[in-house]
Length: 450
Image 1 (cartoon, rainbow, N blue to C red):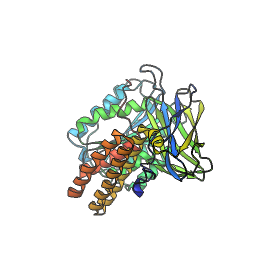
Image 2 (image 1 turned 180 degrees about the vertical axis):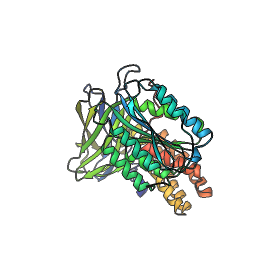
Image 3 (image 1 turned 30 degrees about the vertical axis):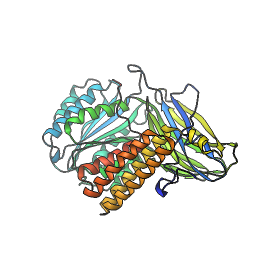
Image 4 (image 1 turned 45 degrees about the vertical axis):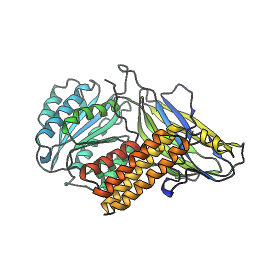
């Protein structure tokens, strides 16, 4: 019996939990690996497995050369940003500008009811004029969020033909979008279109008044980061973390192609968005950061094989542009698995790291589903969903001796009880949404690059 097939929702979530690590060996800044949840699969039956495509990037030297950045800073200055919020936002923006180099491009946009370009896209050079523009930002009016992002992207486009630059819009908002397009779907479409241009949007939601659904749709659809900042005093640290990523880009225009042989059927991506067409799967990323791992998880169905057999389960290729040289490059890797009739051999082949990655992404998806259920007045059903995951993870952790998965299961149970008792308040809903997106995007906790 396949120990992973515990409940329908986790049929693969818990089957995809082991790692066979096949790494490319060339001297590329991007290292590609193909892993599978178990190195050995049960013989004689159709099996669910999870393939993990990993991208591990070399970190840029702390004080070495880096690609210049083309950055638009879009700041909400609506009335709700008054007081300490706008003060902290100015402080964070000033610190960000001071960390940029003279060849970096910066533009500053402020928005309330209307959108104003305070600093058109220009090389940083001397920061004195930039700092004066930032210090002059005051809070008033409503929230034209869509217009602010659109204006920021327009400023980035002024230098987008220069392939040396890393293109990024950083959006800070504490309010609801109430001027212009304002639905999650509209913001998601904007993010998707910007990603096609090579522009990522990072969203920073401040306080408890912003619409996390807008932010969580805009950022991932453009392959940007997303943050929930309840205390405005944390803004400088968040800006620093985000700039650490932007200054550490090693690859851009990343396309991952995965081929599955006959007898291995790709079912779906878990966490990330991707396309599956027949025996091929593909996904794109705007950029990769040095010292960070990005990955995609794909559930597959494997046809029966005899004990002792070995077969290829997946072959991957990543095409990208080196951010330092602007040259195109590609790396390939593949993975085989074997089959055994002995359950202890299958269990011993488990990769606990991949199990933990997979379980985390399943729980991230479950948080999104729980939000939707609570929004529909079904908090009991949301709690039941989390309990299902908790029980399944407990069994998985026990079967494979995975203490990380067991700890995750233990954490889910009290969350489910709280949700059933109290539902989700505003802060918890925002935290759920941000946590989910950060896990699915493998968002870094920060970078130490100066």
